[in-house]
Every structure is written in C-alpha cells, then in structure tokens.
Length: 178
Length: 413
Image (cartoon, rainbow over all chains, first blue to last red):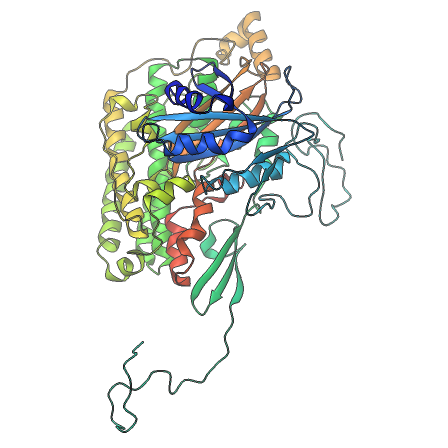
C-alpha cells in the first residue's frame, strides 16, 4: 500500500506528517500539516518513484457529531499512481475558527473545482484559489449546506415557495417541517 | 486566407486581396449562453462562452441546475435507502453506481459476497457499460447530423434496456443489489434471451461502426478536435475512456480487480491522440470488450446463493419473517435501524463507463452514513472541457461535449 510513499514523505518533510494510520479496509492514511500540503502533494506527484499523477478528488468531512471533533473539519485528498497501482489518501485537519488551507491548484489544476465544492458545501477557504466562487449552489445562498449544523429541511428559495404545508419533503426527522 | 500581395496594376491578378471587398466591421468579443437548456448539453449545463467570430476565447461551465442535495439526503437515510439515490447519479448506467456503492459499503464492513453475486454484478455492470457507450456514440452521431447511426445505437440500447428491465424491474432507476449481494437472482430463461440480445446488439454496433468510423464528414469533425494531452488529462483528473484515449493505460478493472474481473479475459483498448475521434473509437472498442466479458460470465457463472445468509446485513427470507420471531426481529431492525456498519472510513473505486467512480464513506457505527463522498467521473472531466475548447472553433464544442459524455446527474449530485 502507499506506506512506501508516505515513508518517503516523512523522510523528506518530517514536519509535514502529523499522524499516520491504516483504516479498516487496509488503506494507508497520512494526516498532513496544513502549511505543508502543497509540498506534500508536489512530492507525491513529481517524485519519479511515487508518480501520483492522476488527481482523483478532494472532499471534506464535518466531524461535529463524531466523538473526536476537534478540530472540526477534515479535508481529504485522493491521488492515484498508475505506476504503483494504488491511491494515496491524505487528509488535513482544520478548525472551525480558521478554516483555511493553501490551495493545491498550482500542483494539480483539477483541484480547482473540488476546492470550490469544499468552499460551497463546508465553507473551507482555499488561500490563493484562482476562482473562489460557489460551484453547485447559487451565489445568493447563505451558509454551507453540508455542515452538520445546517438543517436538513432548511430552505432558502430565491422565489417564494407555494404556501402549502408539505409534510413529506425530504427524508429523516431533523429540523422543523416547513 | 491568402496573404500574397496583389499587383494593383494588373486587374486580372488571380490573387486579389481577400479583404478588399469586405465591409470593414468593428468586431468585439461576444458573450453568449449555451444552455442551461440546450439540446447538445445533455442535462442542464450552462456554458458562458466568449466568442471572437467563431473562435471560443473563454468558456465557463456553470453547473448546479440539477443539484438535489445527494450527500445531504444520503446522510439522513439508512445505508440501504441510499441505493435509489445512487441510481440517479449516472442514470444511463445505474447498475454501475448501485454496485459501486454497495462494494464500498461491503469493503467497510469487511464482507465477502457470494460468488454468484459477484459474477452477476460483473454482468450487470458490463451490460450497463454497453448501454452507456451506445447512448454516447448515438448522441455524438445525432449532434453531428447523422440520424441513422443514432437510431441504430438507440435500437441496440433499448434491447439492452429491455433485458435490464427484466432483471431489475426498471429501465433506468434499477436499485438492484443489496448490501451483501443481490436482492434477486436472474429471471427464468433470461440468459438465453440475453445471448440473443447480445448477438443483435453486436450486429447493430457493427452497423454504427460502419456508418461512422470511416465516414469522411464524421471523421473530419472528430479528428484533431477537443485534444488534451495525457499530462493535462491526469492533472485534471480524467479517468476512463477519456484518459485512455490520451494513451494512459488505467482501468480500475485491470489495475485493482474487484469482484471476478480477474477471472475473465478482456483487453483495455488504449489510443494515443486524445482527440474526439479517439474517444469515440475507445467506446466502440469497449463495446466489443464488454460483449466479450458478458459471454464469459454466462459460461463461468456458478450456481448458488446471491445474498449472504447473515440477518444483521441482509433481510431474512419471507417465510422466516412470517414464520419465526427471530426473522421478524431481524427484519424489523434492518428496516427501522438499517445495517449497522462499523465506525470507520474507506475509499473504494470501481470502473464506471465514464471512468473511476470513487466512494469515500465515513461511518459513525450507526445505521446511516456519516459522510458519503462520491467521486463522479464526469465532474473532473467537465472541469477540463474549457481547456479543450478555448481557442478552438465553436463547432468543435459540440463533439467535444458529446465525447466526454458528461452526465448532469452525477456531476451536479
């Protein structure tokens, strides 16, 4: 698994590695320091032995309701190496008070939209991002809908909704019915 | 345009300056909207395009018109209730989404599904790969003016959709499969009909191939348009046919085989140019490979159960539900509380028709997903489309947008 790659990261940037662990399914994880995420990504991509050239995705987890919720957000990065036939799983933890991370669009141009996605849905700011707009939600939208404290049934319609009481809108039980 | 100087003394100069007779018009870049409801945008994507004459200076895709809160809905549903939402990601290849999601959950549980279920999942995924590629190839042809190939493609697609309907009960929103295997086995006499269908589909594919591949009009608009280099494609996160058309040999089915893909013989076609024509050829070749896989599956598939016999994960058989207290309790707990997936996280990737379909799943140990990230293959590909068309002609946009086969449902979640 990608332990070899992470050994190399630890060797080159000892300060960048905050934690390493293996998940239930045997996937190796690296928790990187926020300041060094660009260096780590750049090393994983450009080192000829590692060659994690395919940019896979970025997403975020709001740990508000998990037992271990400090710092609150985890931003997860996935890369793939055709040479090593494996994914690299890297995460960065950021707090609610300062949800900022340096952008990695200078390393992988494809990170652009995924970082916009994280801003849109979780409110993570990517410093130096070339195009920091929302991506799926509309510009007038307030808040970040995938945060756990955003109610399932909260609505922000741009035009008034019909005055019908809809008991069946949305699954689950959280939030007051409209 | 000819730049050769004209001899003003010679009124019969064969090379008159071309601009001489043209009215001198002030031009400035024009901003136009393509979509959100345009026949060529397949779904609802709005492309803000800045044009200089016919040349695209800048393109900015605006997405989100089809956003329906996929992740938020999933976080508030049980693990099994998520399944119908996954149908609606890529509605042209719903089985690939269903099975990809289930495989990720099973990986998190650490569950091995019965062998027959694994074979049927390969079968279903390949069936819908044919379905997806036929739709893509047909749509390319239609939008370049070739109605005949579109009709042949759609006829074949409908035959596949008929078999899928018999198998799952629905044409598009299949919701087939359950955590731990499948909710039902193949119907009676279905495999025989499938073989006949495949023969017919192969015939129709050859027809499409004959009409399009060596068609001068078609090839002229496809060759050399919408080019992206392998390096850039990887930077953007292209996977699947779009990446393999650039010469990168990456297919999840070969690189990290899941289910029984390591027991069937097939090739992964790779092309080098990274243009629309190669992406089209990729799909034609993959149609043949999927056909080959399905025929092997039908030969090799063993008999046996299709669902694990573990009442904490799979619903008990109905006679047990109605006939024993344990069955009732297991059924009640599964329906009301959902499968209890152990706390943890997993990233699992499967090969969907458009590329790597990745699932990052986080569980807090309860009956509902805590976080469900879907890495839809169309999302990074769409983000690379401006790079492929900027500086090119407006007419190149149409085949490019078709061959990347962006599906609104999965991109906009």
